[in-house]
Length: 181
Image 1 (tube, rainbow, N blue to C red):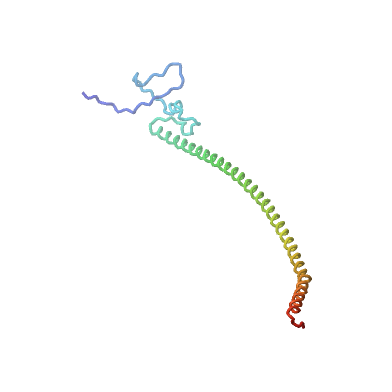
Image 2: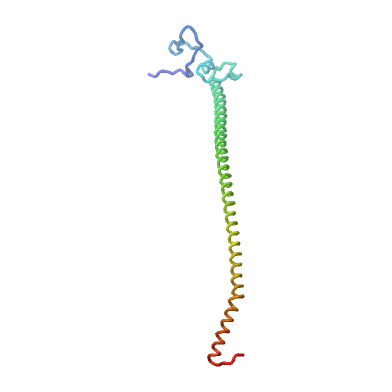
């Protein structure tokens, strides 16, 4: 036995406005109670923001509900994207701030190192200059001593050697009987 099925729209659970008597199911008592779908959507929490002006009319069909769901979905989607973008921008700004601070600290460190290097370079330059000056003075003293010694040798030692040589030659000449000039 086949039962003939009636073609009906699928019933949606509907919430009614608060009333003193409990709501009766339209399925159990067989009465078809037409309730606007917008009221169900409002009590189910779908509409959290003020409803758009198009909700003033009663949603009587599935296509109206589909339109409402589609517009609400688009609205939620755009809000979600906006919120996501704002969070991304906040994260980006925080990251930029951290990088800026890190860059500033590293720049200060580099500047300190450059200042210390410059001080060390000045100290080394001063030491090299002092050493060069000391070497020049030592060289000047050494050259003066060498010239004085050479001059003494030329003035005293050579004539003394010449006299000593003359005496030696004279002694040899007299010993061997060579006439002197």
